[in-house]
Image (cartoon, rainbow, N blue to C red; front, side):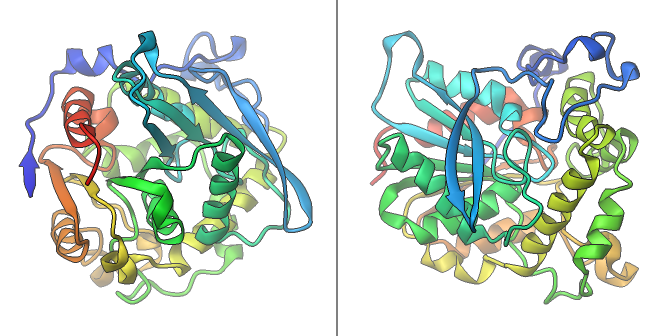
Length: 347
């Protein structure tokens, strides 16, 4: 089943823009070049941040998360777990959290290990299975036995692994422009070492992030509403922990490139809502590939149709004018479609 939605107005974008607050050093906007710590110290989230302390791979770690109850006493008994993308944090889900809470959902938005306000270990075997286990341990500590799992980009790839690992604990899966709908290595992306990723990540600047997101996430468009998420990430690369941030990012890119999930889509048994911006061209490792290979990667409308054919209980929603982040580019249409997809108890 496919629903196609029109583009929203610029005014609506502004009304639901990503709402986070810079610290005092960034009060004048991006020109002040905010500097954040390696665990995003100094950057305010839209809801109170809690921390889940646990031990993994012989070290003490902590995961930052927001636990937002249903608003106005309208709890419907359901929980949505939000998984962020590679270049975002749980804070980026701010507008979506507000929409879901108003509709009666409890919302858990998590920063995964290696990201944002969570621990960035010097040594960690990053796997999607490990991140799924960490998330499951967090949910168990909160006495959440079943939830709707919703992931964007890399979070979608993690959501697939989570749903495959804990199928009885997922009542519904929502995938927003998930990466991993193709196997980039099998399509010709060359081997990329962690050292190569690290060298690239050390060169991260706000300009590089902005240019990449403009071309890939927002279909060539740019609005002021997108800038906080750029500075959120770039600020950590300006800070005293930039090497640790870059190293964790390199390890995470290696995980993403080398642990495909596309071959297991047919094993997803729960209802799955796939939400796709048709102008998305994201493909991990594309910049390392020869030009002839680059042109074969990241064709999201085609990838989405193949995914829906593979997933037994899938519904596809397409945003013709959106790129990789329709929740930010077309928030009114996105949230309307999301709530329709979440109505009622999934069968």
